[in-house]
Image (cartoon, rainbow, N blue to C red):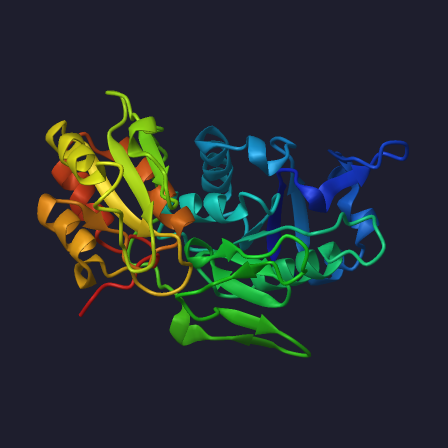
Length: 332
């Protein structure tokens, strides 16, 4: 008996068509007749298509993540897996957010997309979609991203290239599966649900992000009173300027105002270690916390998620430093 797979189409390049006059890519709704476009999907699974919205992924936010989580929650028990087609630009943000929302998800939830639309020559869409559906039939109970023959943990993944089909990387966690002539699932790398499935759907946008660059004046960055957390994207292992920009004094004021301040790195690979250098060590002494080896996408969505769950800063701080869905390698 074929597995039942829910395919949720949200938009993105994979489902766009190119305007014949301008050459601009625009969202389309042809996924309603998906099995006519890729008939081999029906040989893999009983695919049920749902289209809650069709947007360029740059338009998506936590309200759309809540819609997706509600759809998945309503179908758990009736389907064996979920595939979400999504624009690549914010795909890693959505995957990270859903990993926190879908606590102990019992079925695979696999996000995929394409660098070129399904209807175009040399598109990667068919390969990504067919393999995502096949992997959604397997026993992989977590939120993942499939792209260019690789299955990655969703909250460990970042978009790494604009032009290549191999567009996504998992810099700090090994692959969950690889697709070649055969499908190789690396079971030792998978999460295992530890309790009942539950959806946590509250988010807060009260997050401000400061991206440092040489010569930047910190005075331009003024997170208002409504901002409850500040995420600083620092250099390397977690260094910040101490001689210019008066950043340390500003961080001290944000902390005194009750804001949570988190230090991340612009580097994609490795774990941030602010204690190695004077500026980072000073920030830790002041009460700034580290993002560890989380991707920026995982850290930002995790902060918005925790800000939505809790009012008390100490609960947000404590939970941010824990691995909620495999997004963080905890120190021994």
